[in-house]
Length: 545
Ligand code: F6P
Image (tube, rainbow, N blue to C red; front, side, top):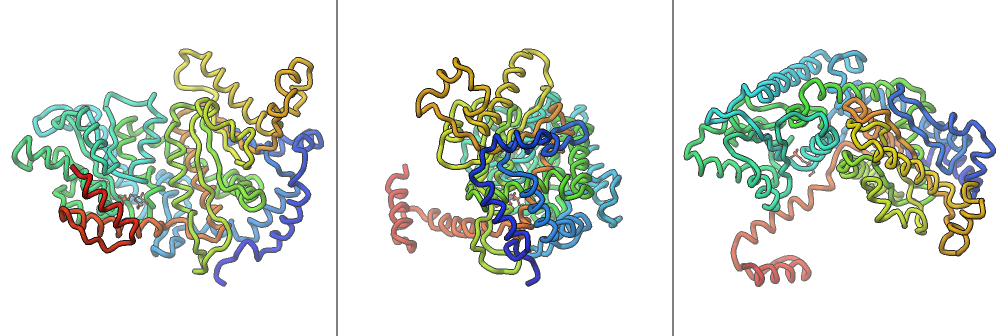
């Protein structure tokens, strides 16, 4: 076999044995038996982030076996392969080089390919010059008015990343209003059109393939609105831009070459926020902040590339996740962001993780019989505490959690809110792990309040990672996103998966085109599908007004 399976390496057996020792352990003992546990199980990342993984059902021996497993699987070699541009995306015959975008200053010299470096520089220069013109009011619309609104038309990786980052960095934004149209549901289009003036808006059609139905249909509808209003096509050069790898289709749409920003073929959609796909971010926060975001990611890349396995944050995150997936049968992982600005973060990581590792075929072409990607879900603290935390604390399923927080918000106004927010962040990880057996609850008053009835019992043992940053700023965000990207990469290698393709989305696309062609014929009766689909289509026809 070309690629190793984790079940064939020596450490797998050792890990199984270690699990038997730990599965019913009292997690308080992990702390009482090791006074240095926090120190040993945490990593300070450049004094910007603290990663604490001490509240996990794991000890040093289990961690060491996991490190050994990562080594036996060949993780270090795989990382080198990705960074040096090997075609690790085999099913699409492509390299995976989003890390090169963050290395645009070429400080680290991961890649020894001058052409790619020059292409990246050219692309960033073009984005920078363009964004300066728009922000400073030099770029004018077809009726010579300054630009006030930017509309990003794109879906999946062509929307989630830019929108998530622009939300997170709202405090850094300038005067431009940024909108996102992704859904084919026309209410998405309508809601944005209701807010903007075509004459002062720019439309970024973001699609690596420039074939994605939702994006092309939305873009065409907007083009039609322009034609209706201005009765000629001169507006296109002033208002429409393609961010794509498909120059031919962009030109066929009517976009001039000058208005095309290239997405490199070696950037996957869900890894593309660092590329020209991030143009709406650059327009919103300016090129300096955009490049700081890339700089943050580059710091994490450097760490990932150089640090030993046992000090490597993305590798540790992936190994812990693997531990719960295989030994504790955890089907899901929850991400809880203690920052309202990060309210789109979970959706972003959902695509990253589930589109990358939700696969049932291994790199040797064999059908997989073990569980691959966990289901990722979550939301913002403290809101989630008042909705689904009940299940985390007292449910019957073990759900490992990642808690993300920022000590300092951008705004110092209403500081009390921030202190309460962070108090919740600390309290939740502690309660989940130690339950109400913790000494805190051992005084009389608290026993009565929290432990006197069976339904007040908290067994604890719910693990979490705490990821706490000094500040929410472009650099921290770059660090955070790159950390998760690399975690997903390591998980993919351990699971023996090609993480950078997404063949699983194709079948539904093909069938929906077929059904669309049928639906276009009004009142078609004789459907050729299964009885459920035919039945629904018949209802559709009879209910359609
Ligand atoms: O259908 C899934 C997908 O290909 C994602 O991987 C991608 O992020 C999204 O669609 C959008 O693709 P494109 O940028 O080519 O429009």
